[in-house]
Each structure stands twice: as structure tokens, then as C-alpha cells.
Amino acid sequence: MTLKQTIYMALAVAFLVIGVHQSIVNGVVESYWIIMLSIIFLMLFRMNKAKP
Image (cartoon, rainbow, N blue to C red; front, top):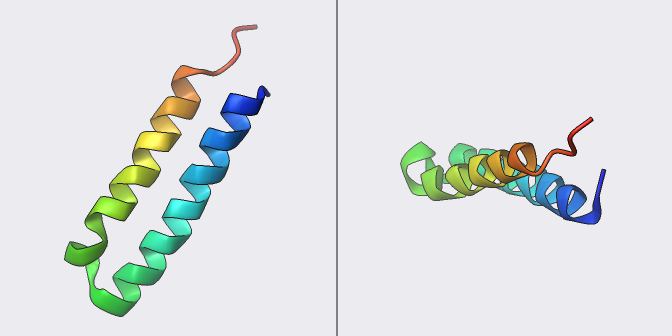
């Protein structure tokens, strides 16, 4: 796993945790953009996955 992949995965997990917390506190509509950022970073992680 490269440094870029590690950063993408860490950001995806962090935004997911923040998004879940905000959706519990404020509702899903207000935290939708945070959850979408998590999905974007997860997609970037998958796109930059090292080829075997």
C-alpha cells in the first residue's frame, strides 16, 4: 500500500465516522455531503490500487 492509498483510506474512514456522527445528531440530509466525501475518497483509493 502506497502513501497515497493510505491517505485516501484514512480520509475515507475519518469522513465516514464524522458523517455517521453528524447524521445521528443533525439528520442525514445535513450530513449527506460528508458521507459523499467519504465515498469519493474510497473510490480514489480503489482507483489507485496497486496492480499485481
